[in-house]
Image (cartoon, rainbow, N blue to C red; front, side, top):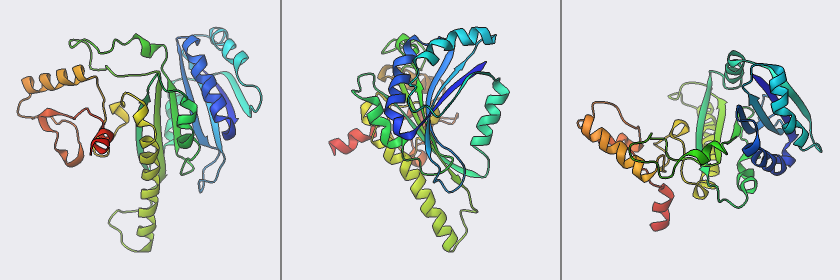
Length: 282
């Protein structure tokens, strides 16, 4: 495994993300392509936001990695580039260690995600408000480029096919991370400040997703909190098939299902419908 990254200032977000979007379809197929927004340092959240284009290529040798990443480096936006690393060796242990360091214990987390539709007119403009307003030092925003893999999935998937039936070229996940300062049951002024921070950080995630979700087919359930937002996680046909299988093999609901608001879903499972449509229709 070899890691290539290019780091830019926040002001270049639209340029960098558009380059990542344009590069992904012809990039080496053994490469994970992402665009991240992160702050430069820990602390009170005032660190500068940087935009990071990352290319993690799963090659057996550095020579193979350099051949795969050469066109990417040649095509990168040169103006404004703050730093870069080209084909640095890494492995899964190092990748997990980095994740643990950036998402440490003793903190609170709020995340949500959305697939942006392939027909969205200007994806960078749509995502810019979320990627340039990170609420704390450790919070980050992730864009995962899925094209062309996303184009291989039939839509809608045959009923007998796998449940993964909803995808797009653009996957976006937001992670608010802030310090956990004590017991939720603690009283006093410090507790009130903790509540304000909770509301600020969760509000950033909710508001940012609300500004994007109407432009896509749904969300990935692995990064979702079913108690907070209704959306689609499967195609209608796949969702119907999941309900059918569950009713047939677990009619009494002995196997735990999805923890939605009030834990009401039961054997029927999630609605698999857009919550924002309820607001519009109402």
